[in-house]
Each structure stands twice: as structure tokens, then as C-alpha cells.
Image (cartoon, rainbow, N blue to C red; front, top):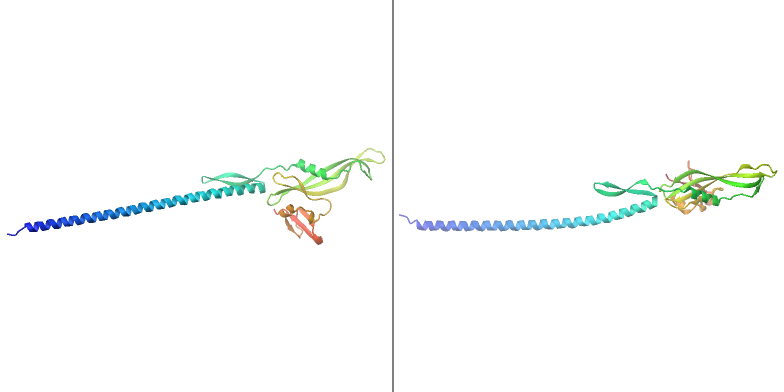
Length: 245
């Protein structure tokens, strides 16, 4: 008969050895999986933190850009006489230039200025007789702005209606006198005061045109179909100022 005890012991030892080896492998795999999981969590945490920092930076930049944009819009409103309104786009409110800003042409102030600068002939004697009353007749031939809406221009025409008492003592009569005088006035938008740009007596020299008016007009030496201001420069050169619109 064979001795089976030794065989059984040998088999038991091999089985234990194999079991221990299997447990070591399982433990090693578990440790490796744990390490990989921890690395993954660390990467996700680091990546998430980086995204938050990036988003915070973008939010800060966007706020700064929005503040700068609103400041630019405010300056544009003041410079051009336009009005910005809020418009909503994808849950974001932005400002858009959509309509003109209201302003008052202030015709009364313009008339008062023209009358103050116009010579009245009350009490003077002309060929037809004594001037008892000099009435100024003011006509506004045209209103216009330059291309940037910085100024409002008024092309005006002034004439005189006189009440004259004839030298022979007859009843007083009304006469038109002196023809029409053209002049151009301008005011800053929206609330500036009226100023004279070009006098209506004769052809003005270009050196008499205010520099701020020169700056907003487009100038040419060629006679255009229509111009706002005509003046004579050095050497008798012809210069035409256009609104550029």
C-alpha cells in the first residue's frame, strides 16, 4: 500500500500557497485600484478648481468690459445727442443706440440773438422819409446737423419791413427795405447756445469761420451741388463746407 499522508500534506501545502498567492494578488490589485481612484479624484478636484478659477477670471473680465462699454455709451450719448436703451439678449441686458435724444431747438433764443445782432433803423431818415418803425422778418430756410450730430445748423434769412412817414407828410406806408441777408447759426446738441457761424453780409473769409465748425464739415475746392458754407481762403481760393450726410 502507498502512504497517502505525505501526498495529502503536500497537496494541502500547495493549496495554502496558492490561496495565499491569490490573496496577495487580490490585495495588490485592490491597492492599485485604490491608488488609481485617488489619482482620478485628485485630477478631477484639480481640474474642477482650475475651471472655477478660470470662470472667476472671465466673470471679472466681463464685468470690467461691461463697465467700460457703458462708459463708452454714455460718452457717445453726450457727444452725438443720441439715446441708449437697454435690450435683453439671451438673458443679458446690453445698451444699444436706437433712437435720437430729444432736444429743444430753442427758436426764441435764436430769434433773440438775431435781433440783438441786427441793426434797427428806427428814427433814421431815408430817401422815402422818416423811419417810424423797423420790423425784422426772420425766416429759417433750413435746419440740419453734421454727420456726427454734434451741431444743429440753422440757415437764416433776415429782411426789414419799415413803416415810413413820407417827407410830404402823407400817411405812413410800409416798405420792404435792404433785401434779404443770409446768415448761418449753430448750437451744440443737445443743449448748447446759438452762435453765428457765417455772417450774411457778403462772402466771408474762411478765417472768420469758427474752427469747431470747420472741424465737423467736409471741405472741397470744387463747387458742389449743395453746400452749407461758402468762404474765400488765401489767394482768393473758393472753399465749400458740406455736412457730409
